[in-house]
Structure formats: C-alpha cells, structure tokens
Length: 291
Image 1: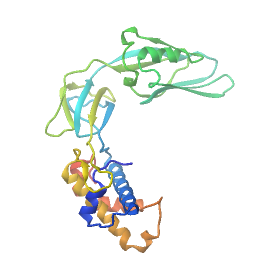
Image 2 (image 1 turned 120 degrees about the horizontal axis):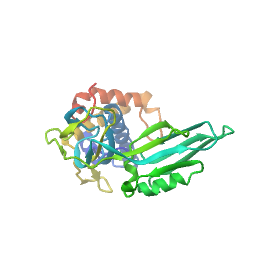
Image 3 (image 1 turned 180 degrees about the horizontal axis):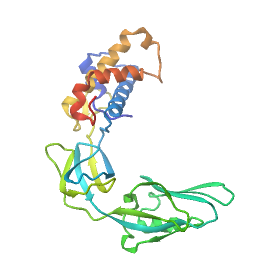
Image 4 (image 1 turned 45 degrees about the horizontal axis):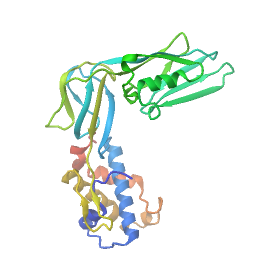
C-alpha cells in the first residue's frame, strides 16, 4: 500500500461521493494507492516517514542536499570512513570471486574449479555487529577476512555499499564503515539541506543517517472521519485529492476505462500519469524533480 497523503473519508468529502459501500471504499483506497505510487515514481521521492542510511556525493562545500525530505532527524553525518573488515578474499581453486555489500547483506559470489556458480548471503539481520559479521564471513568455505577489533561492536548495517569487487586471492576487498560523526544540522528553511563542515567532493564519500518524510493520515475503521492527522501538508493533501477526483471522474465518464480491469479496481497507469502531470505545478514544492 502506498503512502496515505489523503484518506477515503477526505476524498469522499472533496469529490462529493456519497456511496459508502464496502465496494466503493475499496475502490477509492485502491485509487489513492495508485495515484500516490505515480506521484512518488514521477517525483522520485518517498512520502512516508522512514529512516535512511545513505552514502552521498560530497559537494566540496559546507552544505549538502539529502535525497529524501522533509528531514526530521539527523542521527549521524560522517565525512570519513574506516576499514572495519580487511582482506576479504576467496582462496579456493576457482577463477572468479566477487563481493557486494547491499543494504541488508554482504554477498559473496564465486565459481569453483568446475566453473559451478555459488552465492552466499551473509545478512546483517543475523550478524548485527562487525564481529559477528566477520565470524560469519570466515565460516564460508574458501573465504577469509580480518576483523578490525576496534570496530567489533559497530553495526554491520553501516557498511558502505559496493558492487562486484574482485576478490580472488591474492586480491582482496576491504569493507568500510563511517567514521565518527561531525557536527551538522538540518537547514530550517528547506528541511532538506544539511549544513556543517566542508563535505569533501567525492563519490559516495559522505555518510548520512537520518529520518525523513511525513507521518501519514489515517481514517477510523469505518472511514467516517480522520482518526490520525499526521504531518502531510494541506497543500499536498489537496493536490492528491484533485488528482484522485480527476482520475475517478475519468473512469466514470469513459466507457473504455469502465470496461478495463487491473485487479479488482483498476485504472490505466498511463491515464493516472497524465492526470498527475496535469497537476504537476501543485506538486513541485513536494517532489525532487520538475517536469
């Protein structure tokens, strides 16, 4: 389900929809979900409040724009990094081995001497600390690494992402975590920019751990009133209501659309996109791109 920037109750009020049946409720909720999904996809943003651990490109200046906003909390901003696990390498008899670090695991991938392909996913959820992660990596047959003891208790989920790093011995891979945080703050005028010391120019060299997005609106169980107001701006809720109503009206007045089904209550994605773009001027203050 997409982010509730509006609710079934608010859409009914705005569009003057008097049908309160379960079928219409499901139809309107499905439409809200589809409209918000299109808004997020076209606007390259996630509206619901979430926590992010991101490695960003340094600007060489004392300010930096975060990818997700409005930013409500900064947990850690680091402009340097340290090796937490060194010399991760494959010492088997195969001819290929590579390492990737994703948001949830260290992925080991290799071919053995018979060219058979193998993958081992060492997850952060099962190995929360660097010490645990290193032990799990060393337990994978033909793989080994050196854990830096001073980082034993650091969270493995803070590792810097990499993709397909070559790891056939004698070549190896070092896994990095962010250094101690620097003093930084959220710019109050934008709720997106952070300021602090110089963020050195580079590629994915600045670490930011932060919370961003909106607390969402929620109806009561019968959709007779809004139960949770959330923090979604009124202007964004209004724009969402306008788009939902326009798509709803389009479906009501177009026999072709009425005869088309995507799931139980479907709307043509291209038509939803076109309505979203028609209202883009209303969405510009809340998204990451201008169209």
